[in-house]
Length: 134
Image (cartoon, rainbow, N blue to C red; front, side):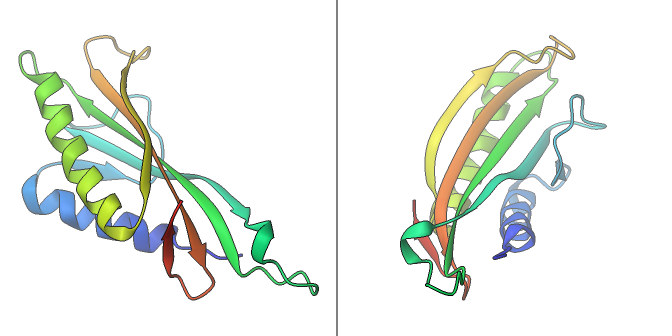
């Protein structure tokens, strides 16, 4: 299995923390973060890219999808805070070679006082960890 989750998470976390040093970033989904602002970045799909599979069933590429959840609990400006963080994540994911497939606000059912944005990114990754726009 081609696995780049740690590399992707580290690159995004480093880029976001450079601008928001107090941000909570996790590689697992959380309903309610322990501190704010917060980001979860999770690889939600890693499937064999069948077009480049060999006769010996060798996996040469995988199609990956990452999901980002951004949370803010500010009384005022929480939407702006989420959008700023989303922009930082988007810049880094795009730099890495990913394509954003969605970014939208969603209801945070666990706690409606928390503003939440959800985004998804995809790419094709080679066994040498080269990332191709998906």
